[in-house]
Length: 81
Image (cartoon, rainbow, N blue to C red; front, side, top):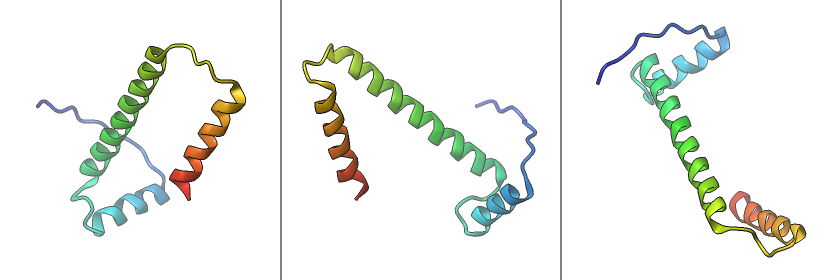
């Protein structure tokens, strides 16, 4: 796979955070950390796109807005304690 060299600027605090992730053994270098962030972002984008496609494919709901909202709140509470 071909690679492209990028130059980025981060704050001192951000640099400290990146270095701490490397020193914790989570990553071996800065590039690995950034590639992991990009992969996670890509995964979130794919999941969001799939959810939108599922929603569009499901058609118009017969539920009222209050029922939809209540269901969303129930799911949120179940997933976030």
